[in-house]
Length: 318
Image (cartoon, rainbow, N blue to C red; front, side):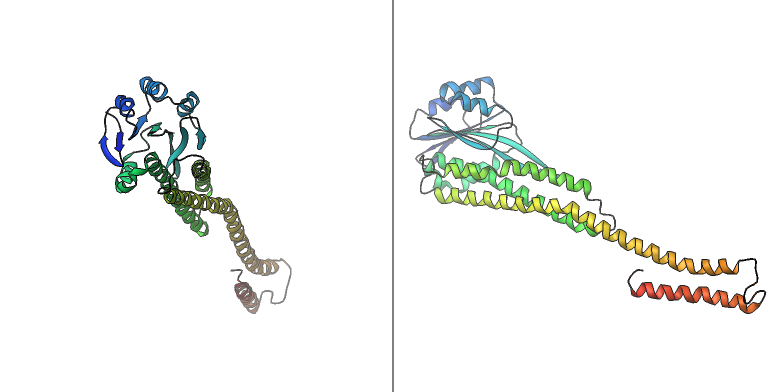
C-alpha cells in the first residue's frame, strides 16, 4: 500500500491503493492521480521511467542530492524541486520534495519521512470544491504547505533573533556563538526560500494550462506568502549582521564606564597616599611631633577624598 489518491470529475473516489496500480488507473483520461514515493526502490523508479514516460533527466534530478528549488519544462510534464523546512533548536531542517506534474498525474518524491504528508492531505480535504481543477489543485496544496513551512520557520527564527538582541544589554550577554548559529540557520533558510519566488512566477505564466482561472487567485496567494517570507529573511539578515556590531559597541561603552570608575577611585586613593607619603618623610614638617599635625593630615585625607568623590559622582564617573 502506498500514499495514493484518485480523483474523478472533481471527487475523491479512491485512496491508498498500491503504487503498482497507478499506470492502469491513468488509462482513464478523466482520472487525476497522485502518488508519493519516499526513498523509492528500483521498481518504483522504473514505473516513473517506463509506465509514466517521464524524462530521464527529470528522473536523474529527482534522485540527485540537493537540487536547487526550480521548475523544469519537458514536452509531456513539468519537474519541480522544492524543500519543506522545520526550525528546531536554532537549526534549519530541510527535506527535499521533487514533483512530477503530468496532464493527469502528480508524483511526489521525498528524500525522507522528515516531510510528513498529513498536513498536505488535510489541505486537500479542506477544499474539495477546488478538486475539479485537477492537477493544479493538487500542486497548489503542496506548494502552499511548503511555503507555510518556510514562513513558520522564518517567524520562529525572527523571534529568536529578537530575543538575542534583547540579551545584548545583560551583564554577561555572550551572544557570539548563538548569533553564529542563527546566522547559519538564516543562510540555510534563504537558500531554499528565496528561489520559491521564481518557482511560483514560472508556474503563473500562461505558457501552460496548469493553473486555471479558478486556481489563479490561490497561486497568487502562495506567491504573496513567498514574497513576505523573502522580505522577512532580508530584514533578519540586516538585523543579525548588526547584532555582533551592537554587542561590541555595548561592550566598548561598558568598558569606558569601568575605566572611568577605576580612574576615579585611583584619583581618590592617590590623595591619602600623597598626604601620608609626605608626612612619612623623615625630616621635620609643620606639625612635626605635634597632635594637631596628625589631625590636620587625617582631616585632609578624608576631606579631599570626599571632595573628589562628590565631583566624580556629579560628572557620572562613579
